[in-house]
Amino acid sequence: LIPVLLAVTLGVQGWALALVALAAFLGHLYPVYHGFKGGKGVATALGVLLGLHWAVGLLALGTWLLAAGISRISSVGALVAALASPIWIALVMGDAWITVTGCVMMVLIFWRHRDNIRRLLKGEEARMGAGRKS
Image (cartoon, rainbow, N blue to C red; front, top):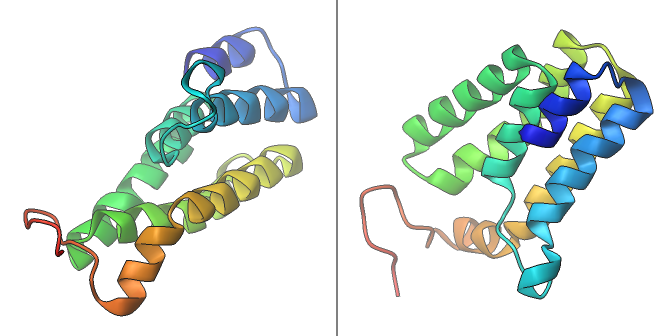
């Protein structure tokens, strides 16, 4: 959130802002100081989106809440929100560079969730509030 907000505050736009957003996202997915092993990127993507435009961030969060609430599966909420985020970016911001960045983040979130996707397809993904199936 902070690097993106700083860039926005300084008036950075277009491809340069897209690079700042992508760098912040990639830095959390593949942190140098943790052997390039980070998280799945959902919370970081939310921070990046909130920094780019508050409405895009809130739409992504709302999408996650709705999808996770209906399915009772957190990874479903994350994947649906990731899929919707480039659409929200395009509709709210109308910036092609930022929309492409949203698409890159979406693909990487799907890649990082590949084990969750396998469990979803097998019907083995844990529901919120329940323990993980062995």
